[in-house]
Image 1 (cartoon, rainbow, N blue to C red):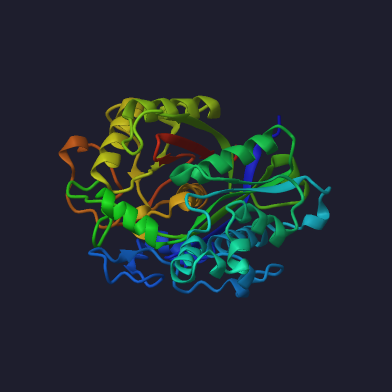
Image 2: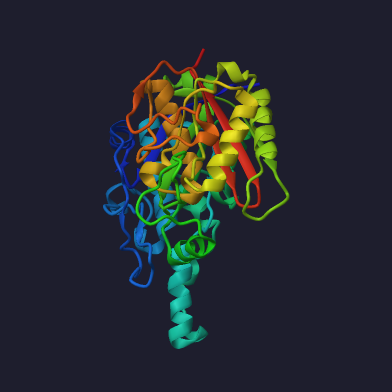
Length: 401
């Protein structure tokens, strides 16, 4: 069956847009956290997040008119255009229907939903804007990518929350690996919005100033936004057109705790890791780095660390969380993790967990790559993604052998 490789990357984040700027941000341990401006935060005790302040979709998009699309769809389309440009993709060079898009999200067009809600509250249902209603459906995210790139293959939006990008990458991998597609664009997009900010605050999961994953004194997440898309294609297709190959998608694993709506389960996450490694043909000892889900909440990091020690033993590979830099980008989170994982393989550095000061005695032997990026020879990376409802998704990437 066809092997699947990554040949294009498209990050749109609070620490940089495009592969070079995003890589520089990760390597420098840059923080993209600032006071939120996308909505009125004056009533909130916690007011910071990872917003993309310099987002200018019109500078990148070639086919879409930004005003006709919601912010999350714009993130997805711009990230996909960046990945396509990076990968040298030309849809005209392929058989129609052999390239498509799978995009993950948590909230879809959340900013559009809030604008419509405000119109209803202010003027009633008759006051809703037809233009905004047209932008609302969550399937618009994948449609935006397909329309921007002229893709006529499968176009699917997956709303599996904070693990959605890994679900999307896994789904796209299956389409290429099974021969149903030659090229797929996969990842995720989400926008900072009031209801998610309020919801995490009421849940007690929102920290005030800085996200500090795996630190003893960690106190929660900061919401973030952006788009993260990978271009996947068969190895044969990539070699035929002379494409640069970043890494190989080795496999993935999925499962669901089917238990608590928000509390993660260590045994279930450990099972997901074993499933992903088995599907990828990788032993725990062969994994050089784990790009963690690492939200910075006391519960997540404790459970994730417990699962890592259960699977890898007393000396696991380095484990870092890029959410310390860009916040929790929800449906895009594991897409950004996948890009960071590929940088680790292709550029030989581990992104740091910034804001880290104090080891947690509950997992003192965990190496969080504290505060400073580290040069390393990396062959295999595990990228963790977990979601409310116990929806776990893990992808594995490797250097092309």
